[in-house]
Amino acid sequence: MNRQRILQRHSERRAMFAQLLSSVRQRPLLCLGLMFYWIWINISFQSPLLYPLVRLSPDLVAPSIVGPIAASILAYFVLGMWFRHSSKVFRQRWYLFLLVGLMVLGIGAHALWLELTWPTSLLDAHLLAEQSGAVTAGSIALYAISSLCAGTATACLCIEWGRIFGEHGPRQVLFHGIVSFLGAALITALISQLPPAAYLLTSLVILAPMALCIDRSQREFPRNPFFDHGLDAALNVPGKFLVTALLHGLSFGILIGLFSVHGHEDNTALLVSYAAAAVFLLITAVAVMMDFNHLIYQMGFSLVALGSLLIAFLYPAFQLGSSIQLIGFCYLHLLMWGLCSYLIKNFKLPATWVVAWPTCSFMLGKLVGIVASSLVARLPSASLGFTRLFLVLTFVMLIAALFLMSYRNYRTAWGLARPGSSDVDEDKVATVVQLLSTTNGLSQREAQTFTLLVRGKNRRSIAQELFVSEETVKSHTHSIYRKLIVHSQQELIELCEQHVHRLSGSEPPALGT
Image (tube, rainbow, N blue to C red; front, side, top):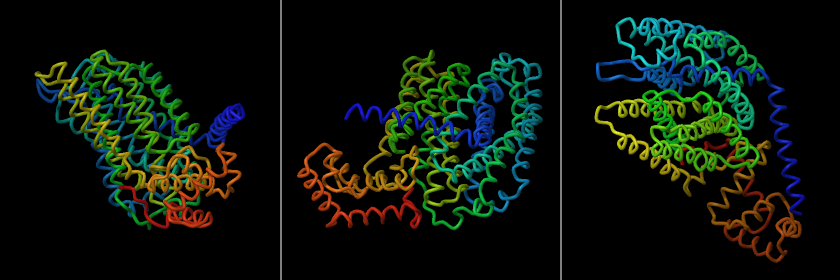
């Protein structure tokens, strides 16, 4: 029997990889467009070469990356507040190419800003990294235009990707996200060896193809239902989701702030971190089929927390810790996308609203983390011990976030969902079984029996599958009936069907529980 199980698991893994490749082959433009988007994100929001330090006073410098991040926060806030009205603009055919024009304007303003602030450094990455640009009236105006265009356009593009994957579901987010992550990391690592001008050129080259890929991906769906999806849904404030995104962004911002002060990340380590995150996600979410609760809090947050602790005690040679953190951040980022997709698809919620608020919270945490870590590290009184304390506090904050996965959290429907599930209906049944088992105090063996009872299996087949006697199954069954206050297997199935119906969108989900 053990040999059969091992063979079955090997078969399932092979099938899973075959499905991944098949999914990418069926929608190559979707994967290609997403890869262009990740490249844009790496260049626009995570590139110390294009966003170096700016000297605000003789003793104070600040990372210029805060400008586009602040602009994106404002854009996400506006989109989240007025998502119903903005839908009229999103459905227009010219909208995506308006975003391209906005991005071209931003790139042009950014190139002029770099040339004005660092006149001799645009073609020399090392010189640009070592100098702190001066602030003038002209540079402020160009910087404001560049930041506003980059932040707004990136936010709007993120909404469109959320809309597309809201139709496909979280499994496709994982498949296409993993492949596009690897491609984007490889290209970004290659061009980062070139002068900053190569970054600007890459940003321009990928804009039109990215817009075309998004447009073609949207054409798979009927236009009006696609853009009207969830506009009339009843909404709850996603409190726990927002706090999760805020903590994710805060810890990421701290890492970026440290990089901006103490040097740039190693590009090989960046590529390895992206690859490791993709493989780890493939194993935990698709092969092992873990739920969002365990994937986000126990896996993702724990990786980032471990990285913070290693950075603190290996500081300033913190390459190992920063690599582990990058793995955690990449891992969490794709999971957040998958979670948004799950909420949009399963609960029929509006894509703009679902994507805008958590991403706004993430960007806000990121901004606070960048400013706090970069300024604290550059204070004249800052010492190695003080910086270590700052990182240890980050570790404590992330470990404390594990309390977000408390007993009450199991009542939150999305926490129990499995993003790697290929069968939506089966996933809903499994979510309901786990929910009822946890909230009613069923033991592990009772929960296994519960799952098989809901599938309609009789006592003998359950006993054979669980390798127990029929009397044991009978005892577990009576205990389940007593705890769930039902009197028959049919009533148990009907109880599950009622909860599945709720998960299908007839009632707004308790996102903030």
